Image 1 (cartoon, rainbow, N blue to C red):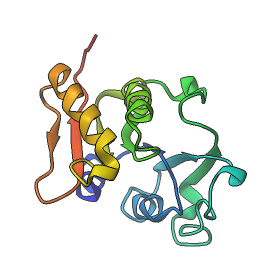
Image 2: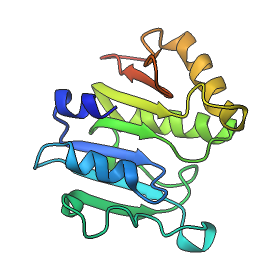
Image 3: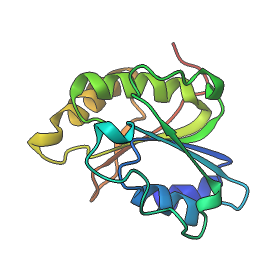
Length: 160
């Protein structure tokens, strides 16, 4: 995932699922100076952690914009077609991953990248694996990054 950040030199990264923000911090550290990272997670009253605590006050945190809301109902339209990289790692239930995948496809610009975390992980995250495998039928370029729990897709220039 992070090797791609250095290669594609993203201007806009959108992360679905902040949690404590370790991955967000890695995006900030490994992306160009002018990159903006937008990350979304549930509001504080719906989680048992301090959302984004791992990047607050850390180098690169000035590039991060934290949003709050449910990714299934959030209005992502201001960022449609603008993102160079979208990281799907919010709720891992099948229906949520399907919704996040649909949003990721709308957010990502043609030729940009989408990555799913926790693919082929454990039965606990089976919803991610099921959604990615079904998405592979429509997007045969979607593939598992060997030795990781990451699936990756370079968004086609055009799609239905």
